[in-house]
Image 1 (cartoon, rainbow, N blue to C red):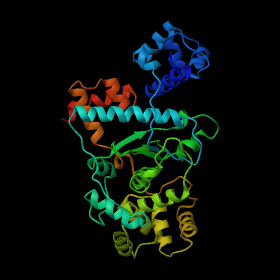
Image 2 (image 1 turned 90 degrees about the horizontal axis):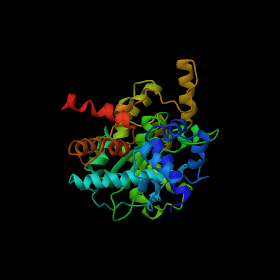
Image 3 (image 1 turned 45 degrees about the vertical axis):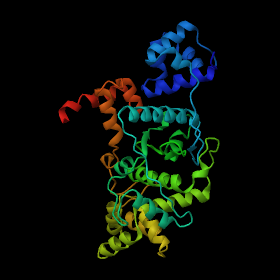
Length: 369
């Protein structure tokens, strides 16, 4: 008999995946909300007839509901703020990556990244080496980072660690404080996972992909599920790697010089749009190159220009959702459904969307060819 925690964890994970509230789930199973909460919290073990109703409501077999969740072993998951759903999130990522791999095998798609040795002490040269391995010229702006890493053989997943997934007064802050993670083992395809929470800017999500790509190539000895605290030095290295990966120095200098005649704010925003990064990434590069007091100057000019202060999480002249669209996995999922390799429910889980959303998406396939 499995532990109560296995059933509880599976109920929470599957319920969230299907977009059901605890009240809706209780009604489907024929329990009071308090009775269902005891099952989901691990306080009580459901009887056999309740297990049957739980499995039916979640669209799974009883065995799947009772099975102890598999754990990721080679993962780099760091966050400044404690995330009480950390283990649950890792279980979800493991399940989706396993399904991704099975689908890739069924479709005969076995791409994986080319091996590349990078200088571990020079982040700029490391970024250049990975760019070349991904068949990117040394200074070309990256307009589609999702397509770039997917076509190179990395797995890319989006998860939505929203404030509703967490608990406590600072839930939203903790949701926004987790940007992503990466999974790496020598015998597996490396994977990058990005928090797709709507309050995290597209610029931040793009930077997260580059940041985790840096970890994959620079910090392979730090991939262990047991460690959750940030290593400050490694985080700074991955940030620097990401900056040079997205904004190669020579091209940055060319674009910055080319905008010489623009007012400072417009100059920063133009360069930011070219490289699809945050204005903060541009200011940090300028600061690293010797310009001081840039942040106060930028904020002061912004307030003078627009009559208000720039908020902490605001991204002026922002990118939108279409600038961060993965192509490969949705294409594979469509093929899987059309060839009856995947059920619609399994396809929705793999993409991390609710079944209703997936059905709406699938209804448009025939319109687009």
